[in-house]
Amino acid sequence: MAAKDDMRASIKLTTVADLFSTEESRAEQQREKVMEIPLSEISDFPGHPFKVKADEEMLEMAESIKQYGVLVPGLVRPKTDGSYEMVAGHRRKKASELAGREMMPCIVRELDDDQATIIMVDSNLQRENISPSEKAYAYKMKMEAMNRQGQRTDLTSRQVVGKLESADVLGREVGESGRQIQRYIRLTELTPYILEMVDDKRIAFNPAVELSYLDEEEQKALYETMQSEDCTPSLAQAQRMKKLSQDGRLNVDVIFSILTEEKPNQKEKMTIQRERIDRFFPREFTEKQREDLIVQLLESWYKKRQREQER
Image (tube, rainbow, N blue to C red; front, side, top):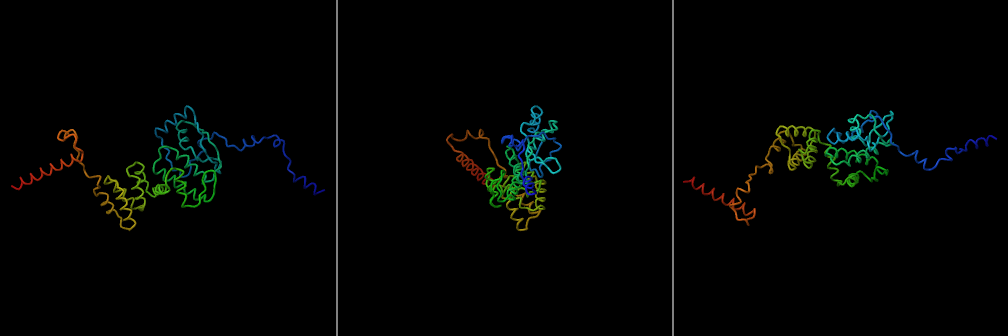
């Protein structure tokens, strides 16, 4: 009798709801839904590398949200304290705040740190204008996440065989070479002030990569010298400073002497307006023939002047 009771207890009876529910309704229960979430309950993604500026484009977005609301929901993941963390939609959140909104439509999705990082980076790399510093930190964050995933294959990342391949994998995804990805990541070694100069296009990308090999004190001395002398290093100068730094021979005086030397492209050039000299040359003369004739005449004038001074 006891055995029969145990057998009955072990049998799980199908409920009426289970009998009449369809596969479609069960799928609907699992489907992600858009929720209106208070902005005050959504925190930014930790270390979010993309700048959220109240620029003209942001103000236009805020004006659009005032009229039509947020048309594309953000993506958030739940936190243990009941609030949410933004994964994709930081600019929409800022524009919503500027528009005076208190709520924002969002999709809530359970994501681990690496999945969230990869989605966050990918969603922002679609933007048109991305600064070198944003790319640098975004590539670094995504590559580290890919490396941690290792051999895993999931919805947010291709299979990664090893750390050496991750730069090439990431490069294929964003249309860059693996080598270029690594060069961008080097920029994260620059001090904030120098990196800002790169974003402002006061320092070109290639010299900036070389300067990233200088230590913090050397970069500080370099920045102060650039400010005081109102100059920036060429690629050749940056490469020399990198080599001297690696040899332990870079200091403030050396940095000053390198930066203040005359660069080939800084030598003054004399230009003559074409209309002032065109009438002196035959029409069929090439630019080279004109230049040669001018130099020849100047040499003749110079020799004549020298002879007159010797009398």
